[in-house]
Length: 146
Image (cartoon, rainbow, N blue to C red; front, side):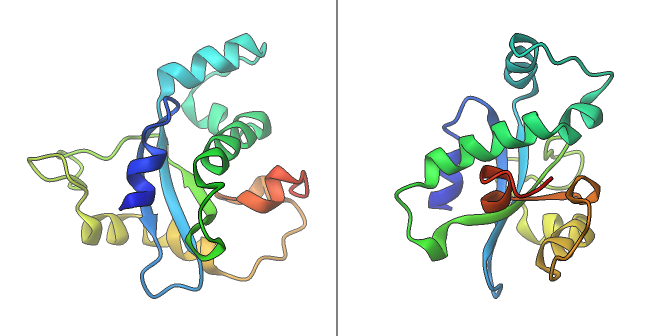
């Protein structure tokens, strides 16, 4: 949870659920602060029809990756997020992902997003990274995801 607390101090990331228990690396489900992200996109001359379109944009994905990397640069390698998925809807009490005190319900999140989570842990060898639901942090920062 220390990683979650550090990353949610970022103005562009509203919520994060770290996945790593009994996994070979750390991954995350990220909910951006859409208002802040839309301002940055507009400043860069990017326009989108909807959130889903915005979240598939390479520049937006790279921006989120750079924000995550900034917050974990001092972490040990095994603590760093290697892959993440950007969600278009926030975690909520109504969605069953949060308690009344606004804490994450990890079992509910793991169940609800099981397919997206498992996709991050499958060995990758795609020809087109834009077709993936997840972002590989090292690859996008090195521009190897195109």
